[in-house]
Image (cartoon, rainbow, N blue to C red; front, side, top):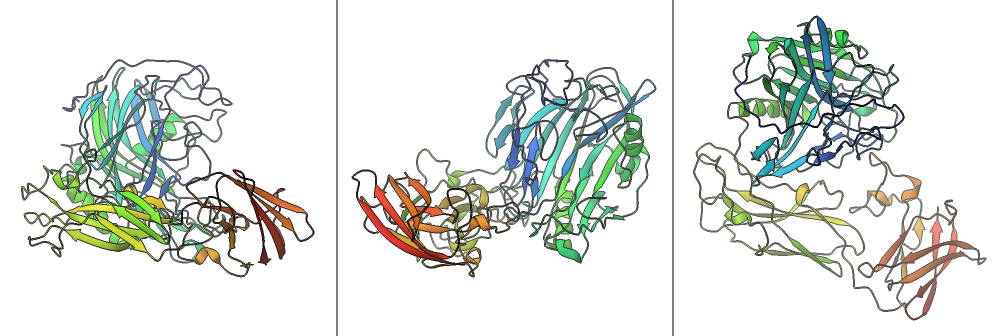
Amino acid sequence: MKISTVIAFSSLLFITGILDAQILPPVNEPLVLDYKIHDINKIRQVITNLGYLGYSCMTPYGGYGKTTCEYPIGSGHDYLYSGAPILGGIRGNKKLFSTADAWSNYSEWCAYEFYPTAEPWDTIWVVNRGETADIPYFPNYIPLADQDFVCRYNDHQIFIPDQVEPLYLDVIQITHAWSSSPYDEWILFEFYVTTTRDGLTDAYMGFYGSAILRPAAPSSQYIHDDQVYYDAERNMGVVEDLPGNNDDTIPGPVGYIVFPPEGMNHEDLTWTFDNYLMCDHYDDQQYDAMSKGYIHPPSTDGSVNDGHGFFRLSFGPLNMDIGDTIHFFVGEIFGTGKNNFLENADRLIKLKSNNFKTPFAPPPPAFRVSTSNHAVTLNWEPQSSDVNPETYEDPYRFDNSEQPFEGYRIYKSAKNIGGPWTLLKEVDLPDNIFYANTGLEYEYTDVGLVNNLEYYYTVTAFSKPDTASNFPSQESSKSGNAKIVTPGTETPQTVGQVAVVPNPYRGDIAYYEYRPPWERPSSLGGRWMEQDRRIQFINLPSPCEIIIYTLAGDLVNSIYHNNSDRGFADWNLTSKNGQTVSSGIYLFSVENKKNGDIQVGKFVIIK
């Protein structure tokens, strides 16, 4: 069967090699491995150009234990251990299977099947709203959403000894993220799958997700009680935390909807939802698991940190000749609570009828920050070099508004660059029927702040609502335009006013519960730990050296400060050997390295 979608492919560089289990990727394989992170909406989703969604030992993201799919941003809640497209078909009498997920716990090969080529442009292309990208295999690409990631990979780039035979498929993957409500709680995955050698009969395609919900718990051990089930009304695989146990901080379920190719009716295809069979990577077993046409009943996991939080959702059968392309979508949906989650799923399904095109928010305004004593000033007046939100155009509106821009909003957070946000001010165009008609302003000063502490600020632009379609006003991303700002006085020229705060330091006070937090948790999941303790030396000249002693004159630690933009330095109450210090009275000296002046003082630690 031929698919009408036409993609212009440049010639591929085919490299054959053997994957060494100890060296990933192989030293003789000049692959262009890359990752990007969607974070302009309420979701922080890692995307790789291996087709693998999540942590991968083969990309620069690295670092086992990092969140790969965080919702909401800044919460530490991780929803997706791994995820990837799954593809199967029959060539001759062989059942073949390829996945972008890592596979085979029993194999000697730490194996992925899909790889980019060595072409320097086979990285992940980032294309934002209003831009056009001249991608070699997708020329004149215009983004669908506010932020699109485009990459391609194939399953015949590297030979893996355990792999029966490649399907010889090329895949273009596009991921779409919207920045503004109500479309900021999903990510849309788009796949173009093309056969490049021989044909395939009885091909099946879909998505595999190991969606084990991981809360930002105070401990790495938690009772895992996720239920995995199929929502037949929405053709959606759902992973939902059941009430009870210590993982109930997860705000809601996660769901994955597979949208079949345009022109194919859902009822004419065979669908499989498998959330039971954990088969190893044997092509015939994996092919059977995704093609059996059976909808498994719900499964529930009651073990610790492992279990049935996975599923396959696939469709077929399709016959593909050489050069045929199958084009399908997968929606990843979140929400706060079950009702909001289902509302978001229904919105995405409804959006499919409009080819996923939506009215969109103005571009985020560029803004500048200046700090002073206990104050921060923001200015967002458009400069000649800025993208001006006030002049943007939106061809997807139904009201044909020539100037859909309406106004600006200014927000602050004391907790995290992903919020929660407090609205400080809203300004909008005068003399129309929308909002308060305040008139536009371009500057705001926030006062009464604590010096030398981090705050988060963002300025957004928002549009008029679309009165012809009742589509709500759209607002640019908050977190995607946020800045970390630290108010404070100018750096003094010399010592003389250096002080220690807090003094005394009290170990019985939860400084991390302050707003803003004095001791910001640095560990994954937001758990405060002993090394997060914090004493601050303020009014420091630059450069200078701080030396901390016991009353007996023994050296505890030293800090070299060389930052003329920040007149303070932190100490985490550990010695030069990394040991935590005890209660007591401590002495300090600060030497101005420019002129040799020295100031001494003392402070108290009570634990």
